[in-house]
Structure formats: structure tokens, C-alpha cells
Length: 187
Figure 1 (cartoon, rainbow, N blue to C red):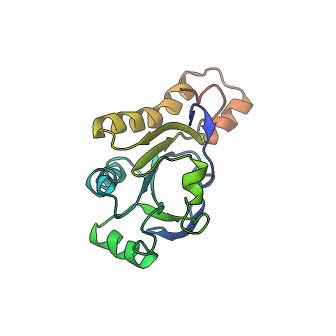
Figure 2 (cartoon, rainbow, N blue to C red):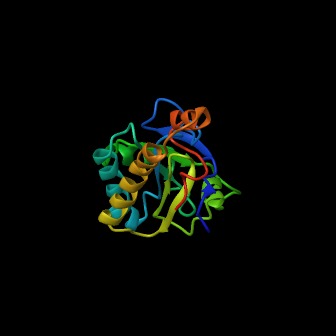
Figure 3 (tube, one colour):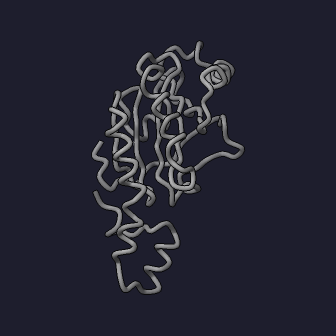
């Protein structure tokens, strides 16, 4: 997937955990979104991806960063039910919002996984404040690399909006909408 400046597809979720409302990318606009796709029976997810997502949720303010887990089941369907996922979330003490990726064709690839062209789990996708995919990684990524990427996205629109002087009424509105405009959201 060539993610540079590609608008992130909307999530297709059948059920949410750890969220009082159904989340949408449009509703999270203005925040950096850390989308972590996992399966609870995936060793790489359990050892690396899920703990990393939890650390990101704990370290970055929720006013700037939304960590969203996506339980995207493409194998072992009978074992990874929402009831099992609820127990898994409780046992691992996960606090970030987790959606169940909507099923594709019977025992096929889930819909959000298809839309993002994910190769498997764990997958980590970073979406900037403007709703553009800025990073798409299959497999484990080191914490320092991920933390630096998230911090860069958190701070880039603030820095660019401050340096964009003088600003007209149209730019003031874009800054009010999270600092997003075409020339501010580039890699």
C-alpha cells in the first residue's frame, strides 16, 4: 500500500469494547490515530503489539492521540469470539478502545483489513490529524521508532500552524479544525 497522503478508509466494526460510543475516524479527526490490528491468538500481537499499544495509550494524552485496537480475525474464527475477546481484554487489562473488524465473506478476510490492505497481524497504522495514513507497518516495530513517529505527528500541525503567518480567515478555520490543510499534512 502506498500510504503517502492516502486518506484512511473508515473503520468497519461490528462491536466496540472500552468505548461508550461507536468510534469513527471522522469523529477522531484532529487527533493522531494509532490503529493497532491484532488477533488474540497471534503470538507477535500478544508479546509485542498489544503491550506497545497499551504503552502508547498510557504515555500520550488522549486529547492528542487516540489508540484504537482492531481485532481482525482471519483465522481460528470459532475460537476468537466477542465473548473470548471480552475476557482477553479484561485479563490483559487493556484500556484503549477495541473494535471487532466486520467479517468479510464467511471465514474470509475482515472488511477493514481488506480496506487497509493489511498483510496480517500485528499491523500498526498511524493516521495524522488530517485523516491521512502516514505509516503502515506489518510486524513488530521498535518502541522508540513508533514513539518518535507518533510524537512527530502530534507536534507537526502545531508547529506548521504557528509558522504559517499571517493567516487568513480560511486558514484560521483549518487551524480550528485541527490544523489540517493540504500543505500541512505531507510526509
